[in-house]
Length: 347
Ligand SMILES: Nc1ncnc2c1ncn2[C@@H]1O[C@H](COP(=O)(O)OP(=O)(O)OP(=O)(O)O)[C@@H](O)[C@H]1O
Ligand SMILES: [Mg+2]
Image (cartoon, rainbow, N blue to C red; front, side, top):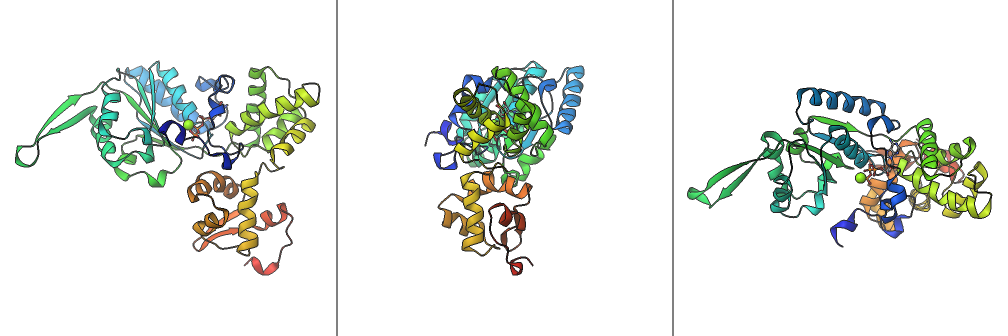
């Protein structure tokens, strides 16, 4: 699979996962991206940290410190990288860990950065080790060390880089090597958005897309968006089509319900894959605990997909519990799926 499509979800993960799909790069979805910190909804603490870092760096006339963002897909990591570049008035160069196959790929990018530029590396935990080693001196000393010859004849030459800011994003901070992680000065985790923020994002995006949405419509959309702005935007587009064809164009609670029923998104925002995951634990493994590999094998899905995309939200809403012996379905999950609860399953 070519690199540029790796980050997109496979068809089987469904439209409603938080993962990027080709349609997310369409012009009208891209236009929904907030461009300044002041447009960014929610994540107040992160916004405040960045506001201070940006202001301090600007006053000192220096590039901002390197930043690492961690969090499930679709919560705004890439958006924040764009915002930092806009606020710092630097150029943004975008790449990703898997796209950097050889040291030369990274060196080529680094040597073309101007002072104050922002380099965004998505999925930074997937950067090959050999490439990562070029990052250490680049981040710390704004330099690249070239080694010529081997053994006793080895010589190294230091090449100076312009001072830049590295913004890294990862869905799996645990997979990041300690030396790389430690070289980021600012490290922030993005959490799922709260209900009010999602309502606000739905309203904002509807306005930008020039569609009318009433408050109950925005509330219903927010409830079904798994705490994720990308899903708000994606569902909004589906609902817009539905409202236009089946109603008078205004997005209401009824059109959101009608449209999302067709998409297989239930009242909690769970998709077919979420429900199959929960049912596997409940039906095949009597509620758990069961290891992730066993669930993945039964579902015929990659365990990474389950860990990165399915589980974060189910853990967040307490439908799944992670114990030392594996995953367990919670009482709330049984109830949501309409299973009878057998008391002995809950110790
Ligand atoms: N705070 C926000 N306010 C409004 N819209 C937002 C916000 N954060 C993200 N979005 C919207 O959600 C979409 C997805 O965000 P983004 O691409 O930044 O996610 P991501 O965290 O980089 O995801 P991935 O891990 O898949 O790369 C954006 O197109 C943007 O329109
Ligand atoms: Mg991204």
